[in-house]
Amino acid sequence: MNLVAIAWKSICQRGLASCLTGVSVALGVMLMVVVLVISGAVRSAFNQNTIAYDLVVGHQRGGELALVLSAVYRVQPASENLPYLYYKQLQEDRRVVSAVPMAFGDVTQEGHFPLVGTTAEYFENDYTPGKKFLVRGNQITGHFDAIIGSEVARKNNWDIGSQFQIIHGGADGTHVHHEMFTVVSVIKQTGTPNDRTVFVNIEGFYAIEGHETPLNEVEDRLKKFYASDPERLEFALKQIEEAKKHAADEGSHDDGHHHHHETPDAAKEVTAVLVRTRPDHHFDAINLSAELKEGYQAMAVNPMNSIRKLMTDVLGNIEMGLLILTAMIILVSGISIFVSIYNSMSDRKREIGIMRALGARRGSVFGIVLTESIVLCVGGGIVGWLVGHGLAIAAAPTVVERTGLLLDPWTLDPMELILFPVLLGLAAIVGFLPAMTAYRTDVADALAG
Image (spheres, rainbow, N blue to C red):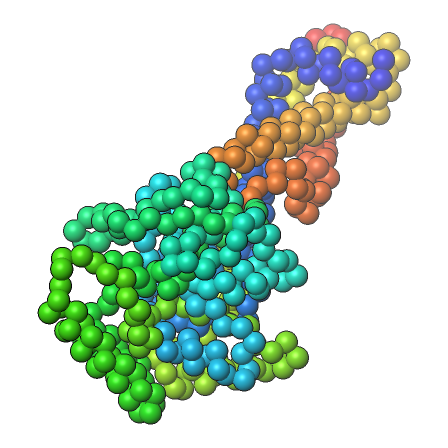
């Protein structure tokens, strides 16, 4: 009979104590695996290499991270909008290859998915470097056309031709807009926030009843924004004056119905602009960002820097705290194994004496006790690893539905590769003292007792 078989028989004789110590190790390893799987999914979702734009341009009010979370990840609303004219201004900049407007506000009545007004150019660009959108259907051309993400289609059971309404939450409660949007395309799964987003024609976004900003308010914002650029301000204010006259004429012939009419550019606003600069001019993005800080009430944020800071300062610290907690659980489990085996030595003294009398060497007895520690520690670790990944598999659909994070339960984190060598070392440390006690057992005293 080999050492493992003898050690296993000894573990079975102390079934309850052995089971409890093994479960404690399994629990610690399971928690560590779950933490690593979830943090891996979060790192993947917020990976700075998955952003295909050089700059995110938004209003100065609000922090840089808030702007990126709003424009790229749709996590929180932006604090203030930019003039649409400024988006057009960025388009004309020789350093800019692509400028894509993003207008946020409202959610779908079913599922409460965020609504984003944009242009067809958004889907012509990469959604992540080197990866194009795969869209089934047509582009958005009509005012009330919509392109939906894969999660929106799955959860709401929508497809091309489906119609829906949107809601707007305000101080007076939730307001349902009467406009009906029609799904013209469905985006294949990307593993990004696009999967949980509904995109509409930005011109249709402006045409929604209640989305008009009062012209006097727009005028005040333009005066503040273009305070250092009187030429552009004069151009914008002329459009506002014309819009006021048009509104006054329309008011005098009001028939009680809402009419969709062309909104002048000066009266439009965007939440953010996603900018790609010339790929062969590495300083374009830096220069453009610096100019904005000195000129208009806008800021250009490098999304990679903001996400890197988020991952390091916030998510990284949370992940490290959870890993330290699970490591402490595993360490306490190792101490429990030590206490369990060490306390059993007095009960097994006669058993060890008989083994020695039958010809077992001191080294064999030492090896049996050390093997018990290894079987409990490593065996519990294997069970915990399997259960941890099993829980991740079971939870993956729910996590995707609720958060949009794509979990790959069987992705191995590099830290998992050192987990079992660490458990083996821990088992050797906690089993050494009980094994030495067995090694030093005097045969005569053991048999006499």
